[in-house]
Length: 228
Image (cartoon, rainbow, N blue to C red; front, top):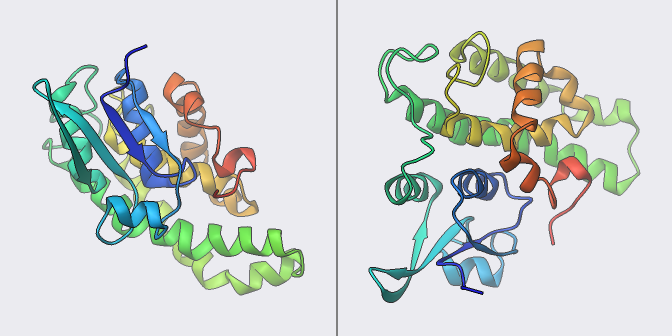
């Protein structure tokens, strides 16, 4: 059996790691996965600041290189270059996009603002409370109330950028979907998933039908998993 040319460093529990594995599976690129949490020894061995994911490229042009490519935006561009089809890019006029670069605008907004609002503000405190078993639901809700209010506004703004139906940019599945989905899958796994609008729920149902989503679900919060 041929050893895959790529290794992804990061736990399936990591939303940024899942964005990349979603694309690898969707594009049919074989890879191995080293499961580790951020700021672990393994993470620092592969990323100067201990973040996830890192894509280890074992071979280029028939030569062994074991190149470590960090940061999801850089990895996404590399994946698109080596495997342009099936495309995860958009064209002007798809969904609400006037220009193609609005795809990367959406991805950047989700990463820079969606991640802290969903994960740091709501999901992580809620999961910690569930695992701790000491706080009542009402106590947790009161504790994260400001974060929930902020998240409500963010979700509304995200939805404003989305097409009225279909994927984020309408009929074309794109990186926008693969960056947004892991966050909202985590949100849906906790009581605050009730914040999801009918449009976002319908979008998630459409995403859940993808083979890439099914293949990358094990090890995530949506099935009750926790970091290794």
